[in-house]
Length: 66
Image (cartoon, rainbow, N blue to C red; front, side):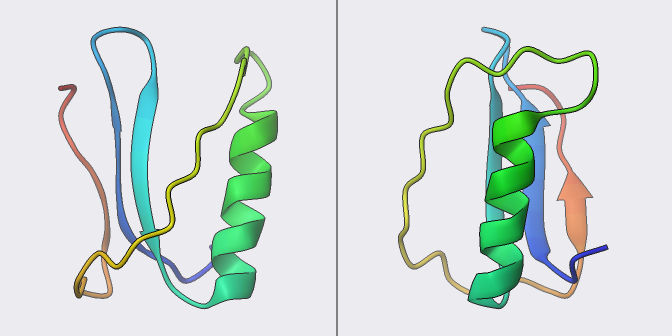
């Protein structure tokens, strides 16, 4: 919906890991949405690492649990 590329996956410890690539305004909106989480989720904290991540295709993937 936000036109981002990247990926997201659940982790075995119950956390979620994601990599977003796209315009700053879209990435910031996605981070804001992550801080709220879906309706039944409990979000304790969101750690943000801003770093160069290379190139992504135009796709956004859901990866298997790690």
